[in-house]
Image 1 (tube, rainbow, N blue to C red):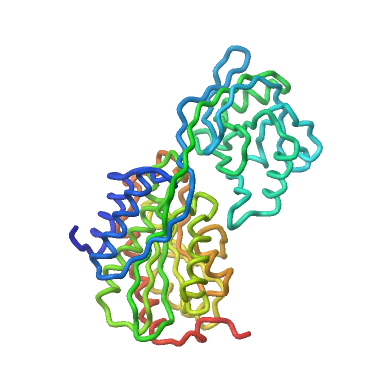
Image 2: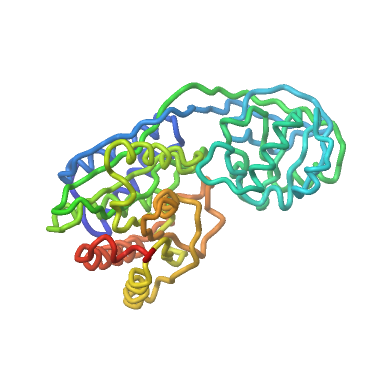
Length: 405
């Protein structure tokens, strides 16, 4: 494997993950292949490597059908759904308040509108809003025969429930099929799912270089994907940035210890983040030693604007980001957003930066998230900003980047 720096090398990393390997859901052989590739890049850069394994399921959908009055509707089993063959009456539900009062036991609720705008957080996840926690609680208490979720977009096909701890069969239907169901409330449907689930594993892949001081600069991004997507934008691009930074920074003389993390399980309940936290407490790589963590998730699309957000940082650290962004007029600062791998750092008091983008939505978590959307120039922009920040951060002590208590 040839070491590559610059935009071309970053694109080669993205291409390998998104094109040569493709969809990389936790537990899959492709996920393990991606981990192997990342480990080899870290090792060639001269980093010591660690893999933090965690158990997870490998899930395969074999066949799914949903029939209403003899008509087959467009449906996909929700990720990790158990198999089933049930006939039951549907009941449309569009808000949590409606779900609270709905008689869903033995029926098949059709989640639409407010209840189906985004993926339902997994009950064992690292970050779960109280609303989603309540939805899962009601489903488990009332035991519907199955669940139908209506995708809120006309053309996307991403699945709305992805919870391996939720033992209820479920499907996501297209918006058109959802319209058919909503026009026939109370109709009996036949739901058949043939799926296989088996024990598997995944792992965070970490590259480290010891510095003059134990305090760490951390760079991370997740390499796993949803079930249906090659995941170029989400998040081969972010991993490509992390790998390129590893190749560049491993050749520089820096005071700080460097840690480069390719997380897995970000798309699956934050399993990798929890594994990292457990290992950090055991092995002396505590969050209290992190001068700054940078997370890259969804950067670099041609039709998007790269963004940066700051968390748990001192005013002078946030001012540093503001000043450096003046040199990057094509980027913007945005309000903090919680749901990615930076959460495990800032929630444990480590100053953090999150890089993503805005301006493109329809490819998110879909089969359309392909390599041709990714701009080498946009990726290089993020890499240059990260390097500019490292140049300043490496000269500061730990207390400089943290808010005063």
